[in-house]
Image (cartoon, rainbow, N blue to C red; front, side, top):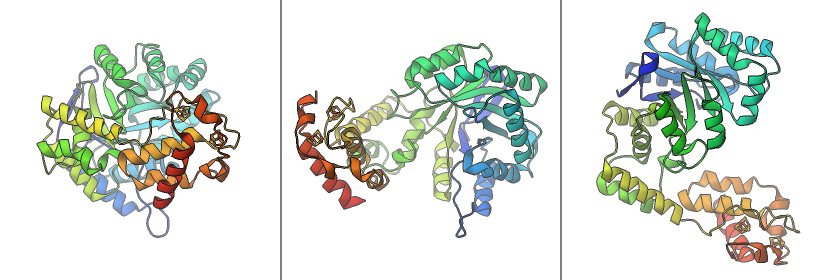
Length: 374
Ligand code: SF4
Ligand code: SF4
């Protein structure tokens, strides 16, 4: 197992972390606990020592299942990360109640890595004014949590604002993968963590599973280097090739996913120059697969007929990039009054589109293609 040192924390974490948010249900619609326990046991025995959950995951069941599964192992042989749901907190007593409930669900006396969940600039400024980060720092002083950080969903400016607003962050967690290196915290955020020496936990290395299965043409540059390596292994290696990254979270709920990840991380190979070039070529091919060049600028809106033009094209292009039927289902779930069917063919949108798109024709093509799949 590949381990990474968090030098400033004196910790060594497995580069593969287990994300406990996707355990599957059994036939009765309840979480399949035996299967979840078996996955966690296999990961622990293979050397995974970082397990990530949150108050809200699986309606609170995730924290309980993780606590149940880990109870048989020495408490100092693994790290538990969980997160405070900050969006509903109105005062410190709310945070104290939630944290006490989390310890009870986990059946643990302390949490190793405690995060403010899903920070953006607005929520962070609100809870800072309520003194919640200071309260977490106090829990750290008291040993109730060992390390204090935040998970993040906003843009780079907000990331820099939050990261530099205190000098006592122990770590932080961002979304990062080779397709989204320019979204949210971005590569600039990764470099900022590296510069400040703040250990980085990465979530969504596979873009919600999207990068685990690629169309053949997008896989070709990767297969040319290693015909047998999975698409997921390339995405994991790309993330793990950044030195600031100390843990990569994977929400595994099937044996084959865990085994593929273990194969990647047991003998971890950072990408070399040729590997980075192959991933860059895969990324170029994925982007080139779009059906039209809609940028989502929304200059064409509002549409007098009610069509959500950018949404239709976003789904259509996303489907074209990855050929993932799940994406096409998003079209099925659009409100009927926003689908291409209500287009009046007035042409008002086409004269406003800076990309010069043939919107009326493209809406018809999108509808035909997406309805054939969903
Ligand atoms: S042509 Fe159709 S999609 Fe475009 S503005 Fe008119 S009604 Fe809306
Ligand atoms: S104006 Fe053109 S590029 Fe912009 S959202 Fe509408 S269709 Fe897309």
